[in-house]
Length: 47
Image (cartoon, rainbow, N blue to C red; front, top):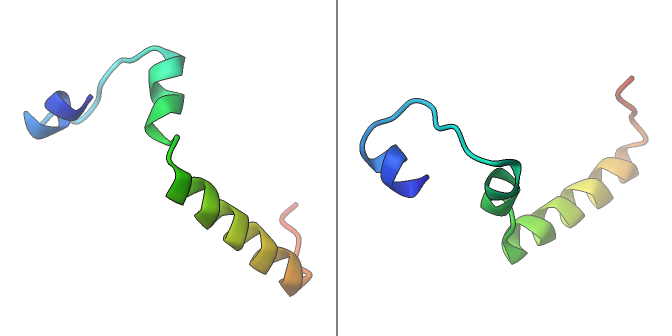
């Protein structure tokens, strides 16, 4: 995926496991945790 992006590809066909793996990072998890906590404090709901 990285090589495709560096080569200038606009899209890449990858298996689901690879796509999920791109978002797997401790800072992503921590950022999502903080965002969800902050969102709950607003009292807003989407749909």
